[in-house]
Each structure stands twice: as C-alpha cells, then as structure tokens.
Image (cartoon, rainbow, N blue to C red; front, side, top):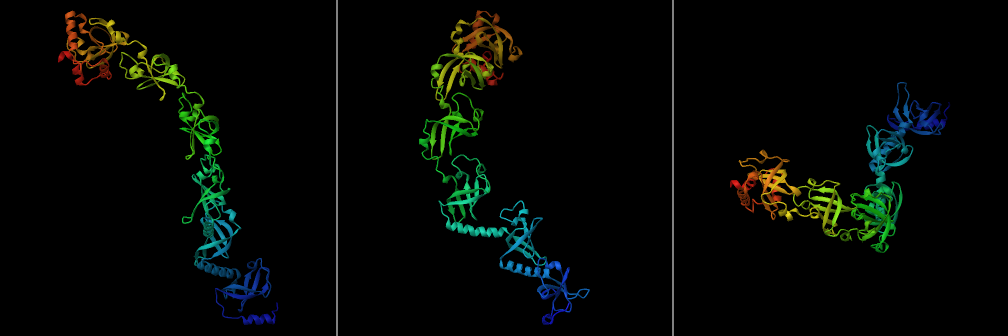
Length: 568
C-alpha cells in the first residue's frame, strides 16, 4: 500500500527517542482482519490485535496512544499494546484520585469469593462488607450496575485496588443527617421506611437519619412485639417527639397521630358499669380484656369467681373469648382499668351467716387435709375448716389423717364466721357431747375396765377405753416387780384389763393400774395416793400433754423420771 508524502512527512517529524514501558503516540497505517499496524516513528511498525479496538470505528491515519513494551522482539518487531496503555493511564488516574480522597465510578462485573469485581478503568475488588451499610446476603443483584466508590487501598506492586461503597453511602447519610437535624423540630410530621425491628421498637429511615419508634409509642392498645404491626420496608407517617442534635437521636411517635382513647376514660367506662370485651392476653395473675381500640382492662384471677378455686385464668377463659365484666377501678395516669367477673353475680358470702348460723350443725365431705386441720365442703365453693384441736374431745390428734380421709362424710358444728376473709370455723367434737363432762358416770376409782393399748412411752402405756377415752397405765402400775422398759411387758394393740385408780375431770386424766387388779380396798387406796402424790406442775400433766410425750414412743430421761412416783 502506498503511503502519501504528507503521511511520510508526518511520520518523519514524529521520530524521536523512544523508551520502553512508556506511552507513545502512533498512527494506524493498515487495518487487517486480525491485526492493526501502527507506526510509532520507529524503524518497524507495531502490531496490535484487532480485539483491542473492539467497538471502535478506526481508520488509517487515526492517532492512537499505545504502551511501548519492547522496541524489538526476537523477530525484530516493535511490541506495543493499546489496552495496556489505557490501563496504565487509568491506573495513574486511580492513584491520583486515591491520593486526593476523591470518588470513582465503576461498573460491577461479577461475583467472586468474598465480594465483587468492579471495572473502574482497571479491575478492582469490592469486599462484601463494603457493598452497603448492612452487608447484603445476596450479591448477584449488583452485577451490571454502576455506582460511585471510595478507594480505600491500593497496592502499586501487585496492581490491586480495594473499593468501598459503604463509606460513600455513610458520608452521604452524614450530610443528610446534618441537613435533617438543622431543619426538623418537635411536632413535625415526617415519612420514613421501617429499617430494622427490635424487641423494644423499630428504627425508621427518614432519608439519611434513623429515628427510633419505641414500642410504647406505636399503639394506644396492647402490643407484645413491634412485628405485630410493622414489617421491614413499610412506609410510615410519624411525628417527631424529641430531637437530640448533640447525640444525633430522634424519637418518633405513631400513636400520637391518633386521639388518645384514655381521654375522658371515666365517662366512657364508669365504675360499676357493665362492659363487654375480647380477651387479648392470658397471664398467671389474670386476663386482659380489650374494651375498645387502645383500651384494655385487667380481670385479676381473684375476681373471676366468688367460690370457685381458680388457680390459672386459662382454666376457665380462652384467647379471643368475648366476656362481660364490671368496672371496679380506673387509674387514668397509669392507664389501668380493673375489672371483675364475679361481681356480675351476688356474693354468696354476704348472707353466709343466715345459711350457716353459728351453733348450727352441718354435714359435708372432707375436701382436703392439711397439717393443721381439715377442709369440709359445705356447698360448691364454700368450705369450712376444722382445726386439728377441734377433732376430738378425748384424743390428742397430731394430724387430721389420724381420724379423717378425703371424701369422708362428717358432721360438724359452725363455731365462727369471718365474712371479710371468707372463713368458716367448724368443730367436729362440738357436734357431740364432751364425754369428760359426764366422766364420773362412766368411770369410778376401783372399776375394772377393758381396753386396747394405743401408745407406749417410756413412762407408761395409753389404753383406749369406751367412748374413745384414754387412760394411762404408769410404768409403776404395770406389775408388782420392777419394770425397766414398758415394751417388755406390754405391746401396742394388746387387749388389757386394769383397775381405775384415778379420775381427774379437771386434768382430763384417768389413771389405770394392771398390778392392782387383785388388790383389796386398802391396797387400792395406797396406789391411788401414790398417783395423787405426783407433783401437779410437772408430774400431773394433762393426758393431752402426756400424749405429746408418747407421740414418738420415747421421752427424755428427765420426763421419764417425773413419771416414776414409786421410785422417788
């Protein structure tokens, strides 16, 4: 191909001292299907693959900038590259931008391990943590998009560039925050998108500024968690409640855009008024009832029934159930309403004394036993309590299970009624005649009696006689010979005969003697006198106290000595 004289002159004038690894200007002298020939003013032309001119409309004579890699290769050809020239120029620009702290635009090319590759004139790396303020879980959606980036790191030797889009966004948001804080004020209505939801509230993006919408400012009604009414991305109209410019904090309100349902609450739900509502929450101590939007009342578990023993509200109520109740109390400041369900019916304790007068006899089933007594059901939900001391005139009962069991039908006398505390005291023994009041007609000194040994103590044995009356056979009255241990000569459950040697109505004691069965009247008087010689303050303890000693079957040595009148 012939070269014009004008082109030859231009080429000759551009001949200069060329250096390898520098960018030089050349002219296209020939365009072939696979390569493009470029004259850089040297003795031979440079050959560049046509692919480096892809998407470019080139013509012979066009000026191009190329990187001179070698003046001569093994074949004596000049080695040049248009792409490497562009890369070197772009690299120099990138380094300049980095040193000046500027931003670069780039197009995301592909997803790689740990992040994205970006073309900013040269290939750069965008870590996943630097893609956005909140690192995205999926990166594919960013491929093909163009963004602005900040260059955070350059390695000139390895030609590595690390970018950050997050820092660009944060800087933009910082500017937006400042503009927002300078213009906004309390009471302003603003619009934002729900950015994040926590247990205590939601953060709303107001355009570079995050505001906190606390859970208590979301609704006038009960809200267990913000997610019950908000979702991420939801647009909200809110009101500014407070602005702290120093700490860059903004408090938001949603419910404040609506009228407060607690205004004039006393006129809406007067005390004593019957109301209807839906159960919104059940807790161990009660049930919350929605009376109107944003207004709830609490029915305490104790206000569910006058008589039924309800331990958990969920035993009788269900979520969503419509119920009727009575307004008991209102605390407007704390936004609390106390409700009662049992007040819908009359209190059966109001006329309890007319249905169960003091002194009257009743019948009922034993519902429960405790260490101190037995509960007897008088009617559904109404119990009376028989104290352990009111079970028997004659027996020292340590636990009610010694005489009663659940389900037993018993007769008792009403002893006392306490309406305020809803208590009725009963007595089983009071329903019968006290056998000790007529003891003289049943037992006299010298009588021979039969009975069963019920308890053994170190000082003697207790024998059950007629009418459940117990007598004591002191250890000294077991046999004529000395007895070291009671259980050596007598056993619990054994049938015995004995003679009465003492009847003490005041102390409720009967003294018995086995050894005196064959005694004459004189000997019998001597044994009775020995029994009488016991000191009243210690030895002559009542039979109930003696039973206390005998409960465990043992006594202390001192107690045992007090019960040995014949050995003092």
